[in-house]
Image (cartoon, rainbow, N blue to C red):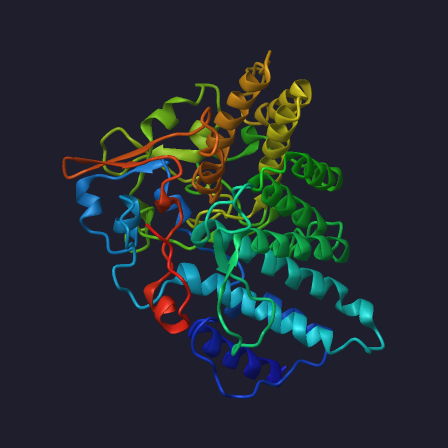
Length: 458
């Protein structure tokens, strides 16, 4: 283990200089046993469980006032009003660095395992290989939905996606793949990973992926690609293996953080978004952003999400702050969960014409969110009515996750579901129109300078 510790230190130093930039000339020792490879994937230096976190900053889930905004630095302040250069010349961004560091570690594991092809016990490496493939796909997906252009079926073959990394060779030339190429790689990684992973969710260590988690991620990827038939198929696969839900009348709303880090049976894969102080102030240990007032008013009085998700704002202005993260901490949840899979399958069923099945999925979820014997089932007479109900409840259920940003990028392509977003700061109104170029965040400028890759238009 001493050699492994040395390697982890070297890798952390190398990766922190950015996967796409500086290359260490120090040779790296290679692990020799399955336990060493697993330690790569479990070690905190990997930051494998941190998504970019920029998506939630740009959504309509919350608002802040002038006084709080004036205390914020870039990119918290600049992402809030959708400025073109949100990094304002900063040297780097953890939203970019951390996911690529995780991908780097996954590739080190995958390339190392490939050298063990003649091992006397190849099956010992199967779950490790599956985990590394899952991590690479998971972080590639979130990077793409932050820094790559939205998936549009007609133009995905030419639209610019993120730089793809499928090797641990730090000297490889950087170039941006197309959106279609990125999604093709993500799908391939997940379809290879799923059969290698355990059918059981690892409840004692939910940072490790499982087969249900891989199927859940395939569901979201296909949903983003607007491939609703395949998204439903993967959702069926995930829910056939695990479909547990938490009844919110068993959640202790008196706790500062109602959900436990280890005891939420809905979580399939635990992950948090990178924290920006516009949403949570680490120094003051409190939330500053307040929930959008129209969104808050959309919850029924008997909906327990009102008490579990929200608390009165410390400002005393009558507003509410979010506190219902499935991380069990102040960090926002960006992992995979049963409620999201159910909502995704409900949407797919509605789009495929199965209105009854869609409402069954929606009602199965929502009855667990209401006070006992108060919930009245949704019914829908048309496909569009069903979609309106499902998309409304999807927003109410998954607020302050990475989900809303990705949904806006997808749904804004449909005139019936497109929305304009508004901010008011210093007496001025800011607008983010559907399909605006600012739905793709800029790549940190130092990455552009070092690699020469093309910047996103804003």
